[in-house]
Length: 124
Image (cartoon, rainbow, N blue to C red; front, side):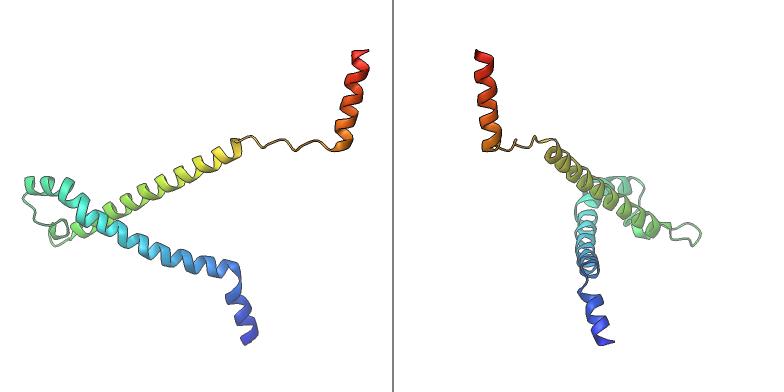
């Protein structure tokens, strides 16, 4: 059983998934900082001050805290947009690699000799 567990853990898919989860958590922290430290002060604070609201999460209506929901939606939209930009640039990079013409391999000695013979026969 321990051997099977070790084989399961050592599979590439499990390790890739573990790395992806850790990277996702780190990426989430970056996006949260982006929203709280940059987007909110630059874009949302003027709007919230015009609406006489101190913090987005404090918005309520008849006891319903819709401010938390709006903050979560904003966080999701920013994450989705950043992921879109990453996937878009990765796709463009892969397209450029696919479009790059591969160098033609140098013809073999046999093909070179046959080409010379053909050219000599044409010259006669």
